Image 1 (cartoon, helix red, strand yellow):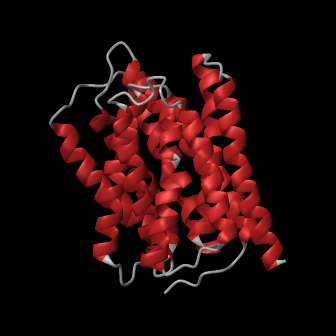
Image 2 (cartoon, rainbow, N blue to C red; image 1 turned 45 degrees about the horizontal axis):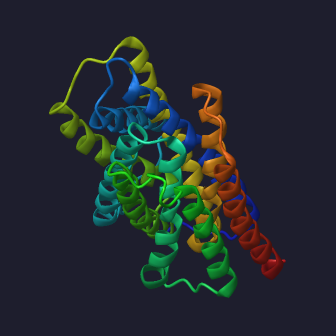
Length: 290
């Protein structure tokens, strides 16, 4: 079993960096799904896994990591939920505003925190519950109830949040048993197989630019994965997950930069509430540990 260290500050920095990378893949996926000849979400998710696995194989050929006692059932479960979640999210961002899809996906840490209680046996005190509730209120604000945000396509993002919540719980289980590189290799190998088979049924030949986008998604995502796994090894899941709310900030910035989308007052308010919840959690954790 790989040792688990406890370093909340390092975990926070890593999850913030991972969030910035995850937001970048969402922007690229939106572009690939909304171009003149858009790619099917199955193809986009295939690019994410296949190119990520290719990069890991090259890295592994250089570093030659030791593979020992992999928990196959956990790897399959984590990879299946990851592939389903990624595909659903890429489907959502191609059909609804990125801010709405990202807001709905913020239910993911809430599901993950709830699952960490029965599956991981973690104890969640009143401060963490309060921080989660505050962040959830921010997500609800961003959903804009009654303004049409809950169109049918939004269900794809909701489904992604549900399965991602389960995935991060499985990641936590794996991170205490196996080294990060082994986890990444098995996840992307299984995910690439699932995604490639699914993509065969909807395949259209991508343009050169689209190939570049698919490769970028895979490479950026695997870097985010590595940071996320390391963050989960440095602190409890219920502490780490709320920091992923920062994805909203990065997604909003990227959306403005690439698509010239201006956030409105509701987006700003929701973001501030969400970040307030994450800040409360971080302050309490550092106060207790310090």
